[in-house]
Image (cartoon, rainbow over all chains, first blue to last red; front, side):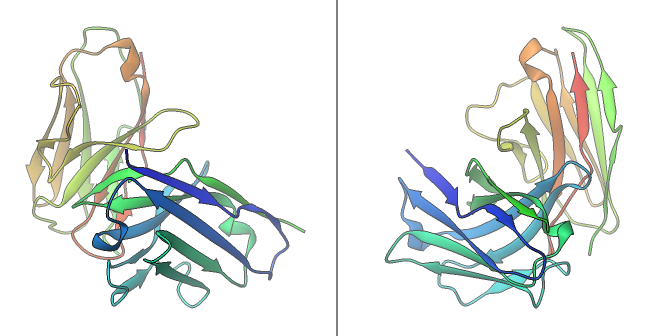
Length: 116
Length: 106
């Protein structure tokens, strides 16, 4: 069955970096566009970034543009989110999601806390 | 970015009730709208895609309608397990944007 498993979350100081991973299984990873979505109690769900199946197209939310980088390794069935210059308002649960026209499968999420 | 305005923000209803949640887009998005259900501590789950298509395995009491800027999610006969928060999402153009959510209490 389709599975997406995020990892890499934790507590990090403002200004530092963190890399999230999303390990996929149960489907042809290289055929799908993938997204990162985050959630906070205050702001609800916020779309973060997307990467096409072939890595050619990438788009970012304005709030993370220039600081976050989405990438993937189709040989490892893994999606990444490199988060740099982290700020307190990046604190959230981060989900990866598969795009089959819509977000039909999601991971369980990984918590990122940015705090000194 | 296309703003998505969802209402109401919270709703209390009884088993068997019919409830409607609305989502308004800041500009026309054709039928590029999905609805998600999220329960505490869980990831969102797709209910409706392209405004009115029921995702596989979703009970038929859920339905969606609308196009352009105005959309609705209807639950025809509420069940206890429908207690959750519901979100709309426009996937017409990047950046994709979610509505603020509707917390439904049974």
